[in-house]
Length: 241
Image (tube, rainbow, N blue to C red):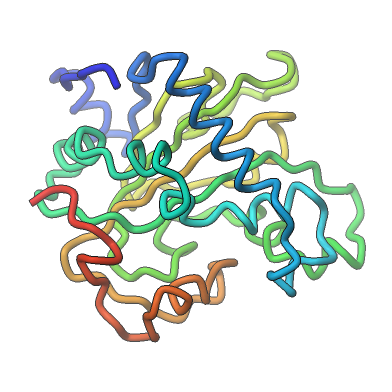
């Protein structure tokens, strides 16, 4: 990963708009490796996830796309990058950051009219919401995140211009955003073929809570947590202090 130093103008932009897009941090080989690893993991069978078995292939990829850093050395190197965490720390002014979770976000084309499949789809329901990241998360204490754009849209003419969007149209660009930034995940319906990789950062004392807005509400239970537990260093590593 290429070294990067924040400028005064970039800090001011983040302070005003609660997000910042950074270009050129990833070399093309690293981006391609990440894409290959992510695709290899998310396109596996979802048969073990009973609540997702009737969903589309795109939604199964989303279901398989949680905490991929635990399954791939290449993804782990990127997701737990202290360089990226330091940028998030500098932008937010929060010195202590721990890793929250990562999530693969494929674009999805929802039908014009609701179908029985779509009406029961947690992912479809989730991406229609527009809210700060914390309202989508079962971690109480999420303070910031980043979105890596994995590829360009299929056509530059298919992506509508959205002011202050945290979804980039340039492969390899990274957008950092704070928990105060309202995230419009419905944009994933308007970016044909695009894919993103989300990383979240949490504060020192963060708690696993019951939040029905999180499609992966029970993911932390599989790691040994129960509702009300504080995040632990050995499961959610400290990246900045």
